[in-house]
Image 1: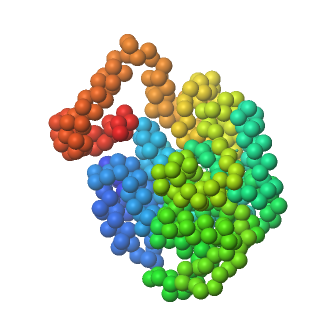
Image 2: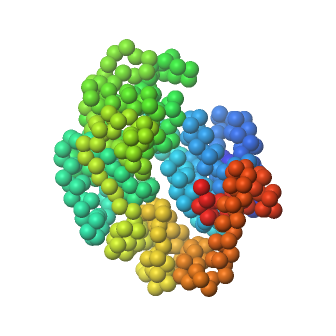
Image 3: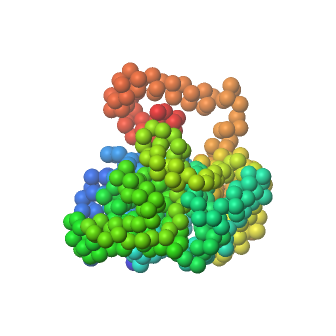
Length: 456
Ligand SMILES: Nc1ncnc2c1ncn2[C@@H]1O[C@H](COP(=O)(O)OP(=O)(O)OP(=O)(O)O)[C@@H](O)[C@H]1O
């Protein structure tokens, strides 16, 4: 049994969901907005904290991506997943960067929900047993590398040529690529092929670290160094001694921590917070980012000196839509993996499903493909998976894409609607309440349309 917090403003749906989860032995606290959720989190018993947060994306007093961002920066690391419509998948992808474990598209399929919940609970459990949440150690690195697919496209061959080239050296590496392209996988491969492969591989997701906690997480602290430092803590730099430290989403580190990081890299020593003695460390650093750190450095958002220290070698991991023939190889791989995990026997995807997969642009890259395939396999009782097992909206999106815009009434209406919203937003200087009133729609609908049409 798990203690879950469900934040959902659709009361019928939340009742349905909590009954369903209750029947599966879980204890669910339901809140209908962010304010209530905050109160529930505050008053949750420290003996029985929430193990998983299940968040509807659009809530009456904000969206759950911002909510989760705020929680993470306050140091809350409870496993969380976001429930979203298919149109918001791009937003959900952002959510994963700030430490949501996963997302699930609405309408929620019960079996899929249980699967995602099970995975979130496993994650919560493994985080509990480690020095820090979101820190992954070498045992997992080994297991995952076995499942690694390189691909046959030209762009993938070049990628792995670079990986093999840089692995045996001790150079720092920046891995750049969109969310879900496999940056962590690449980092693990570099570690495995390096002379440090017998040492630890420690991964930290800087996106889920609050500014206050980042320095202590990386460099450790002494008991009493700050409120809440109840005992000495070893930092991840020390934990990675003799091995590789992988800093995911490094662009999220605050300026102060960046200075300390630079010093640790240049002088190979660290000083835990509140300590007086220096500790020698021998760590290879690999950093990942989905932004262009060079641009951030030029804008002053990232320290120039640190950028150059890290950028001894740069590897770009291509988005899935640019990996051409690899798509088929990844599909096969993920289907086999899902069959094994879920005890299914899907042998083939129907031609229609393959068509959709080839046309779709996969904004969440390999992670999204993996998720969609898991769902597809889960819902397919036969050997051939058909369109029925794909999210309905994915198919509609593909159909819409294929229609010629000139004669497509819906597309014309949507273009008109987008222009109208943009015009009104400009008129009221982006005051969304006023804009919603003028457009005669509620705020929630306005937010939905702003996202749908990618209005800045
Ligand atoms: N080469 C690969 N072969 C098989 N599976 C892969 C490969 N690369 C990535 N994956 C799978 O794709 C998913 C995303 O990979 P990963 O976490 O490495 O991406 P990422 O770019 O680091 O993501 P993020 O930007 O969110 O940190 C994982 O489920 C991973 O197992």
